Length: 256
Image (cartoon, rainbow, N blue to C red; front, side, top):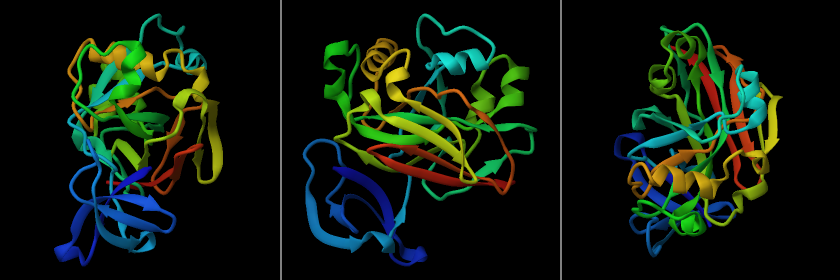
């Protein structure tokens, strides 16, 4: 199932809902997608709705340097354990929404990633039960003010700006995340290309590792790390993160 969050109707009185994408239509859900899914019976043309971030997480737990080639391009060796950091919920935007280039930065980079959406409250999840707590997977862009990351010596400001966590276009509940092709293109030119089988710590390991530290809530997101090939963008650029079996997330960069 592909689950989207969307709005429809006139802007002044728009309705917001979750829905299941079926061909060129979206079947409206009764409530949220956690637990047993119930449909209202209402169906809308997909072309007639506005896709929003597929989820609004309480927190985004991101993993740094989880592809060996990316760790080396950043000037270090791959870490023995996952490196975790947080992005604020206010950084989340959906497909088609603009990434705003902050005035405080002179270098903003794209980082295409596979994102895991948690489906139930959990803590201390064993590796062999990790899939039991997953709702599904989506595309993400861990946008980063690289100059601020270097100058600050830690990552909160560089990765926490509003609009710095595009997610979408929807959540796929059935895809197997173990070996998916992932790529990032800027203005149609491929900049990153890898497979999730190259993750140093796979999805199950990451869920176990993160949940040993903090309770995960339904809708929380884990960003699994970016492959090699990260680089800068400027206002006017268009960034597309594509993952086989899921879809393509596209956002343009605009000046503040």
